[in-house]
Image (cartoon, rainbow, N blue to C red; front, side, top):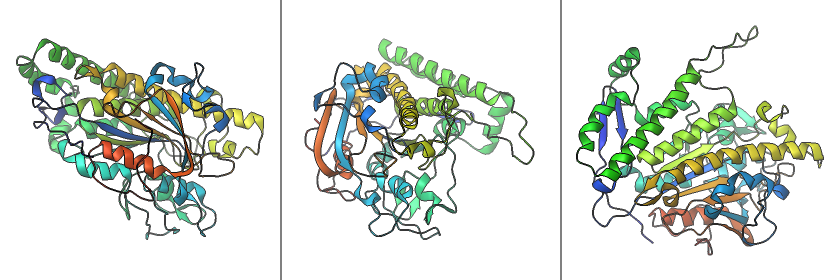
Length: 439
């Protein structure tokens, strides 16, 4: 299967210390070429409250979605919930405890990570990087790695496993994990900032907006575009400016005085919800601008002890996931799960609101969402909570719950998505073949 897409080199708007990729425009596309496909993987840690996640029956999604999936109602026809997938390589296979580290490390690699807390780490290339190796040359960034919770990439974190296994979602090679951008502002600058350090300082010192410095170049281009494309340019810059305005607001807030002996918090938002929303905005703009076509986003590291006071959950997430059947703890886990899905819904709504080649950008995306653990209390890696949102350029049929045979490798799904990105490979990780039934 080959879905390689031919485009002219994308026009880039430039200014002092900035380079901004344009959204897909009909005026600039090669005649007969379709819109490019985009692929994103979003990870949530510590498992899911499965009874509140899984639809009761296979087939069309019910009128009332399960509680955790309820925030996705506006995009229900673009949601494919898949049951029966397993991450076998996240299991011990003789290595004892350490399921959190293995869950994250094996999720996108389909490889069993070497148990070590030293530097001799080993897993496998991740699906996103396989895709980036094929489509990455067409964009400014081959891939974008985002995270919402800063974490350690050094030392030991989980029962003899190096911390990197619990925090790195993307692997360039079996021994090269990729760090995540966890500051939305830095991620935004990585997408659109360019030029020398002197040029960057000049722009920052003048406090000119990143959008302002390329707007003049855009005006020259607009004169050669049709009415529809000019409107797209205006909408695109409006969305860019809104995200930059919010980031400026976050950065300008006064930093509280920390307790004695505690260092100051990072400049980016300490509220995980606010950071997650901003990261979803960055991802949406990255796809809209075609700055990249491949992205990973982790809402938190595996074993995360994050609290969520904004939804009245002040207990650590990992602690709650070991609920031992306690109804109150399970309800709080479900509340966290719904909170995360709410941010996914925000991302999907943003992608759906952008028009590309006469249809929503979401139609050309594949957003895989889920966890390498099913029930956090049991640390099991079968029947994973997985969904795929978006149309995959018309190759994925949503609005359904698909039940697969138990122990179907999750790598089979990744292989199917890679094929839709134009990657010609017979296998990936521990896959046994592409999935049937997703289109």
